[in-house]
Image 1 (cartoon, rainbow, N blue to C red):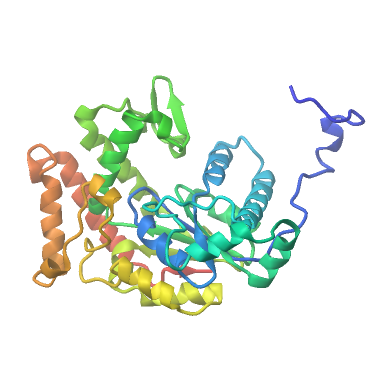
Image 2: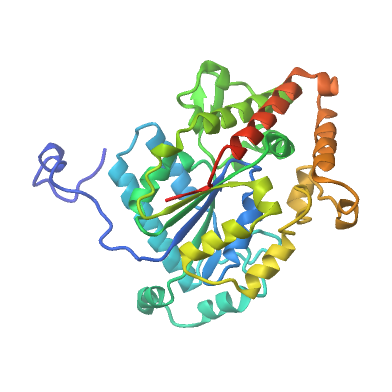
Amino acid sequence: MVFKFSNNFTLDEVKDKRKIKKSKTFSNKVVFVNGFSASGKTMLAPIISSMQNVETIVYPYEIEWLSSFLYTDSIDTQVYQEFIKQYTDHTIYNQMMGRNSNFRYKDVSTVLTKQKFFKYIKRCLTEGDNIIPEKIVRENPSLCFASSHLFFFINEISAALNNRLLFIETVRDPIYMFKQIKVLFEDVYINNKEKLFTFICENQSSQSLFFDYYSSENAFVNLDKKNLNEICVNYIERIFNFYFNFDFKKLNMKNNLFILLPFEKFVIKPEKTIDKILDFLKIKKNKSLQNEMKKQNVPRKLVNQGLNRDVYKRYGNEPIPDKDAKNTTYSAADENYRYEISKIFKNGELNDSFKKMIKISNDYKKWVNNFDSYFFN
C-alpha cells in the first residue's frame, strides 16, 4: 500500500482534477540515436556527440525501462511524457554540473577525448548548483542519447519534447547484424542474464524481450546454443517485419525531426544527413566533427570498413583494411561477407535459416530504396 501524506480526499475525488507535472522545461535540443542491436548506433552516436555544443553520449536506460511499462499499458501516457521532460532536464543539469562523466578510456561515452576532456574536468572544478540553469539557457547544449527499442514510443516522446527532439532510427542490412546479435544472445541472454538491462516478457516457461508482449507464441523460446542460429534469424525476421509493415505516415513529429538512417547509405554518402542534423541543431561543422568522421572512416568505400574497436572484434566483425578495400568493389565485398556468414550455418548457403536471412536482406535493400526521403518533420 502507498502511505499518503494527507487524507483530505480520496483518489476518486482528485484523479480527474489533479496531475503530476514538470513545472517548466529547458529548451535545449535532445538527440536520440536509436535502433536495435547491431544497427550502427556506436558508429553514429560518437559522430553526433563530436558536433559543436553537443554533450557526450548518455545511455537513457531509465527511459527504456519506463517505456516497457507504457508498452503494456501499465502506466498512463501523460505520466510517461512528464517523466521524459523531467529526465531530459535532469540529465542536462547533471552533465553541466560535471556529474555522471565517464572516465573509462575505451568506452564509447568516455570524456577522455581531446575535444571533451578539459571541458568536463573544468565543470567538476567550477561553481555549480544555482548558476547551472542560467548556464544551460545561455549555452544551449544538446543532449545525445544512444538508446534501444524506443521507436515504438516516438510519438509520445515527440509530444513531450516539442521543438526539441531529433530522433534518428538506425537500420542496417540484417546480414551485417547477425554476428553481433548472436554473440549478444549467447554472452548476455544465455550466460549473463544479470547484465540484461532490457526487460523481458515471460510466457509460461519461455521468454522474449518486452516488445514481443503482443507477438504470437512462436516468438517465445527457451534459449539453446544448439539452435541459436535459427533463433537469431527468427528474431531478425520479426524486427524487419515490423519495419517493412510500419506506416510512417502515422509519425507525429510536430516541430521535431525524424531521420531514418540506413547504415549502408550513410557511411558511403553521409553529407546530406550530416547537413540536416547540423541545420536542426542550428550549429556549423567543426574540426571535432571532421576528426570523428575520419576516425569512424566515414565516408568510406565499403560498408565493412569502419573503426577497429575491441567490441567489434568480440562480435566477430573486423573491418576491411584500407589497402585491401582499394582492390575490391562494394558488390564483391558484400558477396564475400555473405559467404563468410554462410559458413556459420550447417550446410552453408543451403541452410534454411541462412536462406531466410538472405531473403530478409534482399527485402531490406528494396525497402530502403523505396524511400524518397529519410527525413520527416
